[in-house]
Amino acid sequence: MRGKGGLGILGEVYYFQFEGLVFMTRADGRSPNELRPITFIPHFTKMAEGSVLAQFGETHVLCNVTIDESLPPWLRNQPEPHGWLTAEYAMLPRSTKQRTNREQRWPKGRTQEISRLIGRSLRMALDLSQLGERTITVDCDVLQADGGTRTTAICGGWVALQLALRPLIAAGVLPAAVNKQQIAAISVGVVNGVPLLDLPYVEDVAAEVDMNVVMTSAGLLVEVQGTGEKAPFSRTEFDALLTLAEQGIRQITAVQEQIVSSS
Image (cartoon, rainbow, N blue to C red; front, side, top):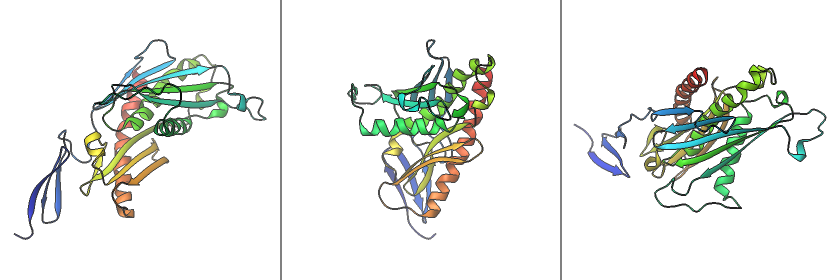
């Protein structure tokens, strides 16, 4: 036999290295290309026009949709009127192991950045010109955080959006064409040289490369956020992560469709 073998522990990620090959055993027993268990609980709250509790493993995000019959001032009286969608993201104080202070007036930069990502992503799901003079607000509140909160919020937000729009479409208030395409998102990363799908916190904090990918159900890219956390990464690694994300998103969109059609 050639080469040397060894057992290592990275956070709670165990790996065995032999002759340059790495065999990963993840903290929760998944294979590198396996998603965490996914659950969408529709109509989780009864007051919102659309509501879903999205669960990716131990990450739980409550997504509520509000539809207002008005527009922000800067969108009123346009030559070609159209609706608008915005999103707000927040983490509850005990969604993490240590209490996080509430952001009472001024959201932190991370919170603003994630809110904007969710809004940009979900606007791609709609034909805003078909929405009329309406504003949709998608509130995404993290009840429990274990990695991938922004991608979970996007996936749950799309389902909640469909539930909110469906009565208006059925009543003829909005055309079915207001729904343009299905949107989902997932995190991928490289841990100890191994590409992994759907990272929980313990893997996320140890990742050499961290990436969030938003795509349509047809496989078109909406947004890619990729960072070399410890060193630059190659185009080959980028392509491998993108392929892994696409495989995961295909599975997520199938679950989304099933929930929307049966709710």
